[in-house]
Image 1 (cartoon, rainbow, N blue to C red):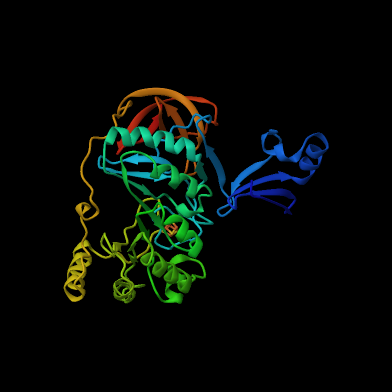
Image 2: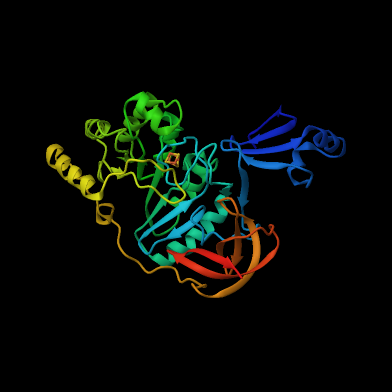
Length: 382
Ligand code: SF4
């Protein structure tokens, strides 16, 4: 176990694998070590906080034993949107604070209350069942509400996913900051394509966009290393009108220069869209303006920029049958706090349903399913 321990603000802090932070008041810790071996401190049930070390939010361990299903939430686990691509979300939380973030991620988020980390064996067990249902030619896309490479079990997870019969592509979303030469050489054994979010090559603009002192050189070096590795590279900038208008062309030139897109398109330019619980910016471009400009650049640079699912080998497949339906009444146990303030997660028939209430984890609630979008369920307490 990679364990660091130190004292901070009256707490004894144990940092496991760089992301799981267990905090115990120093006085409580001193009482504990008189009684037992500190290696077992996490299971003592004494006053403690388990936090995501980056965001400082409560961190919920999603294991088979926790009784938290892996289907039903958009925050963690698996999402099946009726194609041959399955989204796999092993962790929440981000090391950046982008001003355009659709999920309001990073430190000091105004909306996110809880982070999750999923046990890799549990994730693989459920993924195997989903892939078996889908058949051959499945793409496993590792993404999430945050930066997937913060997941401390990534190599183990990828190695296990690569052995699942039926998985033909493993792709991964990343902001690229945590990559380096040795990580890229370890990951290229499993990852078919990295979707790298890089929205400016100018340090000041990139810092303004990402909310941190942005290491442009490190990320562009990582991009070049990926382009020269066994894995493919797709650069996915978010075009934020009024901020990085001039940068998008430079990113197109950079992607072409380093030979991104050996098998898939080299670029996936995204339009900034304000979301209900995401970060809002004043200036928003229309879809017409966006696609007109992409068409112009396609002609100018001779590269495909308006992308379709077929460009990634995606096809429609039956969805995993849903054991619960919109309009139904159910009762279930609250298994975890929800992702947003005021939300709770309830488990019912192997699905997790997000509801709003002030009851506690462990309580039972009666609720009606009010929304089912791609197997992501919301309910209302009755
Ligand atoms: S890297 Fe992605 S998840 Fe992280 S803050 Fe930026 S947009 Fe949000």
